[in-house]
Image 1 (cartoon, each protein chain N blue to C red):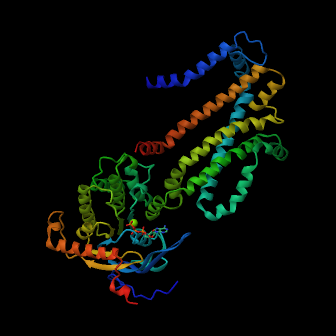
Image 2 (cartoon, helix red, strand yellow):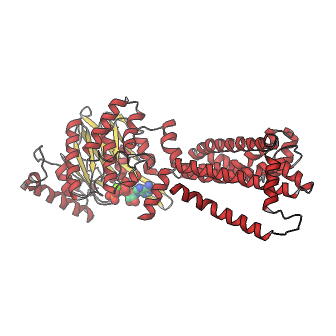
Length: 257
Length: 283
Ligand SMILES: Nc1ncnc2c1ncn2[C@@H]1O[C@H](COP(=O)(O)OP(=O)(O)OP(=O)(O)O)[C@@H](O)[C@H]1O
Ligand SMILES: [Mg+2]
């Protein structure tokens, strides 16, 4: 019952929006504005064929590889930089510099260096996604409670055990906030990395449709992107609830007090 | 800075081979942006193995500072701390600390049981023995019924009892406690005082117990070390010559108990009024 209610709430607004869209495009003749019926038809036609294998899945694959690498690199580097002051002093100016570079401008450069390869696209995604994870991890590591740290220290919890039992969980809420930003940046960069001089992928296909005035197909591609975004957000929320159950509970108790 | 030539009004010291814990000429100055803060000027005392000593002193007199230096969490500015004759430079094995800030000393992402178990697990104690130690410790502090709760689901007093259980389960040789009962109601407090004495006797652990509560210091300790107000020296190092078997009702009703607490009370009042022990004032 509770589950049904939840699903009802989640679907109510999308259904209403589609109805409004349907009603307002009744008798619409503008070529650039698709009706729900046409779009649904084109959607199935366009994407439930070999495009899934040739464009959608490779794009999603690159997105996953890029985002996961960015998360791992961000957390590992963040743990190191956050733990050692000298490393922080050493890397801070350089990090600020690289962070300031908008990743899309890297696409042509990387294309020259690496060619139009999967590797290049993944590197573009990583170069944009790593920052929120990295910076949040550094902050999270630095914000570890002194008393908690002393407790761990007196009980001889050091080295890897300290990372596992103290540092990672303590920085967890911050890290997850970084991961959330990383996911949305990842989707944007996935599209951008395929827009220049590519010959396959979601971003490429959408641009292609646009250039050939296949407007309903273009719209259906945008719907695919939206759906990927929703799926990522669901997976994220599910995982986050699990990993940070303690944190949400703690917050609830604190807010109630 | 002018040189400090005042002789240290020392606490009781022992021959080197009899002392478990030695604090020698300890001074701690915090360097802050707002200037130097001298938290502790000069402390010297020894604890015998298996001794239970209480430390009282006005707020801000550097009790927590002293404990952190003993625990190897900070280096003293001058002087040294010796454990079994070895200089303490980092947290020693076999030493447990119960911190004043109970709310911040437990891992909020672990359940009560996991919190108590973690130090043992980290030391590689086998599972069966670990379970037994954790069960016993939780039972002893009266928390056997909440092992699966998270610390933040418990009251302040219960959280502090979890921290005590964690220290007890660890089976330390030296146990440092920083005002552990400040957040506990009177009845629980009495129970926990007796628990500390029981554990102390059973494990033969050396205990340094910091408290604000004069009655508590006299009831618990074999000895009460009274600190002066800042800049801190030892105001008095007092033996508590009460019978070894202590009992909340009878011990507290003894005339000697009243005398002792009267004495400690006076000393603390003097300390608060800025009176320095004789040795510290003669220059
Ligand atoms: N990290 C620090 N940096 C600077 N000054 C500090 C620091 N910790 C403590 N102090 C100062 O040192 C003095 C002693 O502090 P400490 O916490 O040791 O006192 P205390 O006896 O434990 O007090 P209380 O009974 O209130 O817990 C105080 O003046 C305090 O302001
Ligand atoms: Mg204190």
